[in-house]
Image (cartoon, rainbow over all chains, first blue to last red; front, side, top):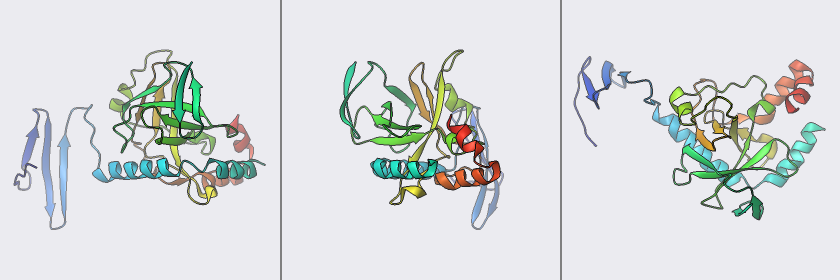
Length: 77
Length: 160
């Protein structure tokens, strides 16, 4: 992993068109400003991780269809 | 017809070339790109999303509007572009459900909706831009709130 030191208000540029700026620095939090083309997807890493974890859990539990049929029957009666 | 092996039903026949190519992969399953969308027997509105490459990889998906009339699909344009939608294409969207020990507490993943261009056979898992949407929305609690406010009409209406 490339590690760079930056101070408040300093930036880095990636691939000619993505700029990431350190907007503010606190002891336990960094605020980043990002300028990037519209087609670049930017998400907090936790969101990705959360969806991935949920997908994996869903793939494992997907076998309980018979129990689900009973529940649906009751719910729609 | 083409023979495929499924997790739920073993070997079955499906129309040829009916697999959906997930050009935007299902997160955590990046190795598997092709899936079949199969109706679940005796469970209207529920589908299996069965991997073509790995029999054991299969998800249960639903149209969230069946349980949540105000559901909105809102994902990045760049994700939608991967589906190469043009005029007249049929576009479907689903969410993956997770069935716990007690199926009445089944949840749906509203944060990572699946969108499918059924005409061109492309699919993606997008990320919802709606802040309230999480990965574990209770399917039935949502319905019950609707039932009380709409006096059960919405339940029957949304199922049609």
